[in-house]
Image (tube, rainbow, N blue to C red):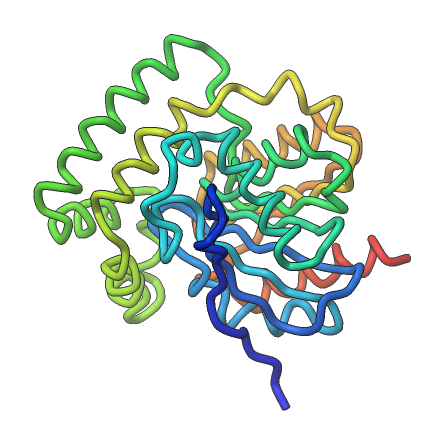
Amino acid sequence: MKPVFRGSHSREKTPVRTFSFRTVGEPREEAVLFVHGFMGSSRDWVELAPAACEGRYGIAVDLPGHGASVGLPAEAYTPAGASAGLARVLDDAGVRRAVLAGYSMGGRVALHFALHHPERCAGLVLESASPGLARASERAVRRTVDGRRAERMCDDFGAFLDAWYRQPLFASLARHEGLRERMIEARRRNDPAELARALRGMGTGEMPSLWERLPCLGVATLALAGALDAKYAALARRVARSAPHATAAVVPHAGHNVHAERPDAYLTHLRAFLQNLSV
């Protein structure tokens, strides 16, 4: 029987609520924690993660402001707060260490986690993820841009989603019939006010640059990107040059969202990475 995710979990009776998450398989030492991108949720991994884990414990989290992880304390909507929240998710799931597989915003959070909670990270897969903007001036400009985006999101969420997925970054979605439309429909399940909180607190402008920390990254890392996403393919190669235990993989015929556009190729790379960790 094909393994499936069990329902969403959260500890609402605790003073500081932990993030909602889903699990597949039985708790064990080898675990994979999947971290979605901006406007996604744990639902993004429902089809993919059970196939990827194969004997490992799979966990898919809702980041602050996404899915069921809403109404959290203000400090949760920060890179440090999100990173600490992932550690609590592992505690709730009964896992000491996990491989983190993060996409885009989720990749930034996963990298932050690996650098600040190294004892909890067994490996790292960064899909279309940047270690941040190196200059403070760049981050300031991006904070202004993200603030305006947050306002537009709350004013007209439907129009925002349509414009967001018409950016050149997501142009390759059009190569796959109905994918852009399905993605927009899935994003509509989120609360735009909560997404705005997440964007203001966890957007690229708020993430401290982690480039100088990469030489200290002590875990095996796979930097993954799509060949049609030239910017992030270059970033993946740069990460591989900067971190001592990192390799890069660029997937042909895929853009920014590799796991949605080329799930077969994503699974191949992830399984090989996990297998190498076990050798």
